[in-house]
Length: 280
Length: 280
Image 1: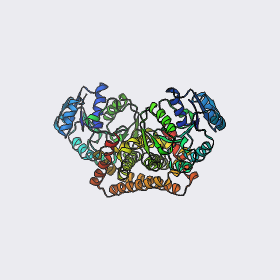
Image 2: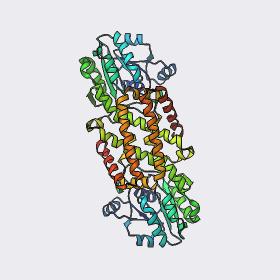
Image 3: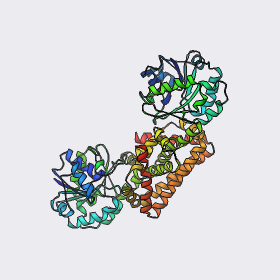
Image 4: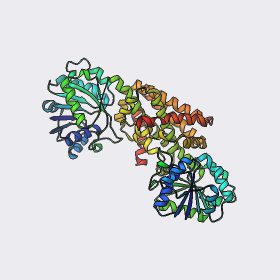
């Protein structure tokens, strides 16, 4: 199988490595508009060669979109316009409603498989790519009934070989869930970093006092703004909904602290502890 | 050196293991009001025997307080009332102002060394104790000028052997800094768990969709309420201050998302990214 990956950052780069390491593709091409990233991806051996979209369409069995989510609807449509019946297009974006709505009526919609592998780190660019990134993580496939059986089967096979349990849901469901289990975590992390940077003047102290839990909650604040702004805006209504609820929960805890309501605090934290049962 | 550790949970238990593993104490006694925890601490070999406060005072060179922070001022005072000039008392609590204020004028204040090792996990009880817990983490020693030189030196030696860089500051400074680098992280984590548990009905999805960043930001929500309620309330004014700023930052991000202010979001996240330079 010949594959082209469009977007050679954290996700695209790691997917390239996974395809190679698992013998799933004998030639991996890359499309990358940043010259620096393209060069680096070649140096790192993420891809065998850099091509343009025309070459990708001429030579690939599988085309993978791994660019920021706001670029997906237009890019996917343009590729579907020119795709042949034996080629497959898949994307790896964190939000799905816009992509699935825009491509919904496309005569070649069946060639697209809309996926979201639930993996990421706070790092970005080709250098952030890691081997065996996806193993054990879930992958969501959206609106699978709109994909052709052979395209779906091929993409399912790839994710299975990578060791990823597959979940099926509508684009709408996926975006709601991801607001809760991913997008809000990034927002709170960014806000926490801003809180500390805003208030804390003695950076030396921040550094030294790491170890108190701060690193894990603030880790995601290192993530790439150009990746995350489109995700928050592309999932705007779900994200605003979760954010409203989260601020509400913070305000409840704040009032309990103000009132020295020890019992209330303990009860609320015991409810929060239930996350242990769910998340192991 | 004979040591008694009062409170055989995550911190006290791990400290017992560190003292033993590093040959710092040839006999470690434990005081523990929970019979179950006392038995478990013995089974796990955290301590050589369980004693009461009288025996601890009769037999120990070093007495370590590792109980919830709201218990520290009274317990430290009672122990200082009966401590001899060749014995040392130290505490390991996460807030320090109350303890240091209450003990400030005590004639035996010099025997107390007020410390806060910057380490913890979301787990609790004797079973949460781990070997080599503190290595590489900072420890804060507060108001060191109020400790006798020999007591201070002995405690510094212990933390040095454990591989912990020592930072000196006033109790007030330490409580402010910890509000920013530890306490707020726990509050946001608890609030995030409550947000998700409140809204998300399909627990199966939460479980499956782990991998999106949620686990790291919500990890601290597994922490023990009985430990953290006293910390939040004992550091009330600093915690409220940080919490107000944090909610403010979340509201700014929320308004940007509402207004589709992509540039504003990217600029804010780029500022947040600076945490990378500080926290490595």
